[in-house]
Image (cartoon, rainbow, N blue to C red; front, side, top):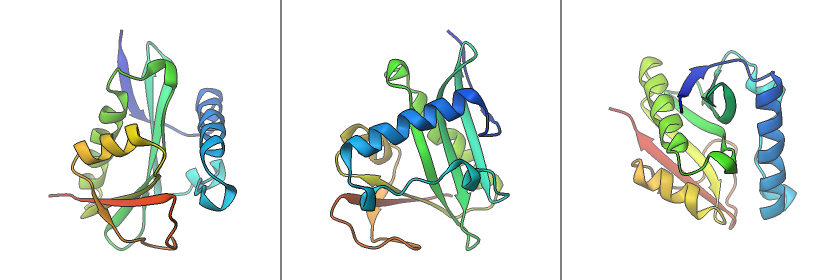
Length: 152
């Protein structure tokens, strides 16, 4: 089994299918006002770095780092195909995002995740993310958890 993680364009069939799977999962857990998903067009802007995880060539995970322009960046669209879970792909995607953040001179990476995703929360906490108040355009939401990790 070979897993690769590379920067790739989001507009490709495997990534689009994975994002659709991610959308359906989020919609099964949260009402529309608590889903803070960005669309494909937003992932294609210059401030966004998209990373794709492939297992033996097949797309099994993705995530994006969105630079805020103030020295911080946000993780968006982090998702691993359920069939590929347990292979540490989420952790590897996070490591790649952190490498990108350092290369871009980002001093902190932030994220929003939902309270009904204990595996994601455990992944982020295990990687050194800590809870913070809502940031950017987010408003307090009892179904959201906001986290940040300073980059050294």
